Length: 197
Image (cartoon, rainbow, N blue to C red; front, side, top):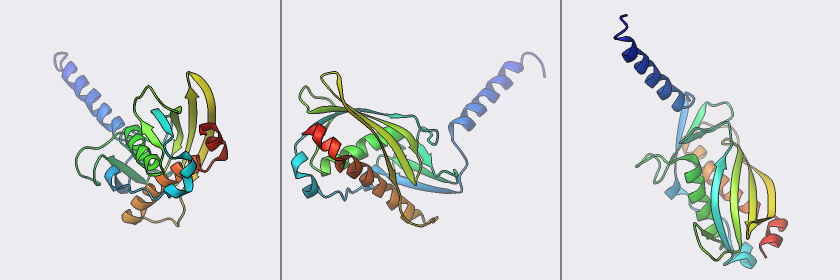
């Protein structure tokens, strides 16, 4: 190899490495999750005391070691969950934090909580941080502030039920159920209700 060709080979190797590292693990089963397909099943009547409360949802931070930009996985990294704005596989893929932000907004709104992107008037500000995300368990922290002061923080964990399967439609529905579980876990916590009320 001549020195004149070295920059071309070097650039090609760098591009290949970036592509391989950015793609995440190689999985045997891929499940496509569409945010539009998430239909919350949370019962709004269970949370009447919280109806109309306004939460300014700042952001979700992803500190999980089991996600890539556009996907998350089972703990063995044999099943991958690709996230989309619309019905599974249609249109553009959606980043993990963006997918969960909008999906959780949908779930909380369905329960009667008003989730805001920005507003001068609100009851509390929320920042959420994912510590671990797999298809069977999501561990996350919530941090609520008001007027720049911390008023509530807690770590939660939600788990998926059901036997192991590779049925893509069952796996897809379980992930929508996990979104409901996140919403319910926070809303069912008496300390959360006390803070917001």
